[in-house]
Length: 186
Image 1 (cartoon, rainbow, N blue to C red):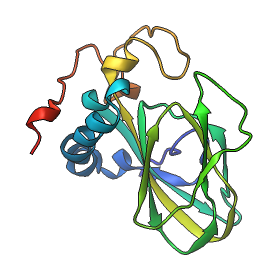
Image 2: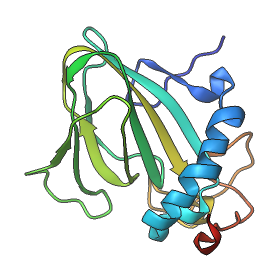
Image 3: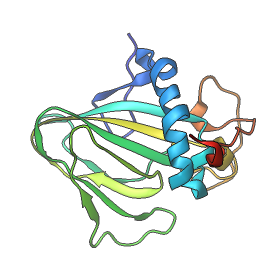
C-alpha cells in the first residue's frame, strides 16, 4: 500500500486519501459541517468557499517526531484535532500571521485535549512544543478555497500559474466554487 509523508515537516503519520477516506469521510465533513462553520467564523479568508482539503493523521512519540517547529500551513484554514493516546506536553503555540511577521516573544499556547480541536488560519504562525511522555495522534485538515488561492498562492504570495493535475492539486482549480449562503443554514 502506498504511504506518503503527511507533510514536509512530519515523518510519522498517514494521508487519509491513501486509506480511501477522502470521499466517504473527509469531503462530507468539509462540505456539510466545516464549510458552513468557517463561513461564519472566517468569511474574509475563504471560509464560505472551501472546495478542497488535505487531511492527514500525524504521530508524535519518543524516538520519533517529538515537536514541530514554527511554520504556517498550505491552507486557508486548518482544523487540528487531538485523537488520543496518553501523553504529556506537546502544546500548540501560536504567533502572528506569516504575511505580517512579528517576533514570537509571547506566543499563545493551547494544550491538546483528546477529542477537542483547534481551528485557525493557515497563515497563522504556529508549532508544537516537545512531547514530554507517551504518544499523541492528531487529525489535521488543511481546508482550501481555490477562489482565494487562485489569486494569490498562500505559500509564495505570488499569482499562481495553473497547471492541470489530478485530484485536489493543492487546492487550485480552474473553475470558481459555489459560495455557501449562511443565511439559509438550518
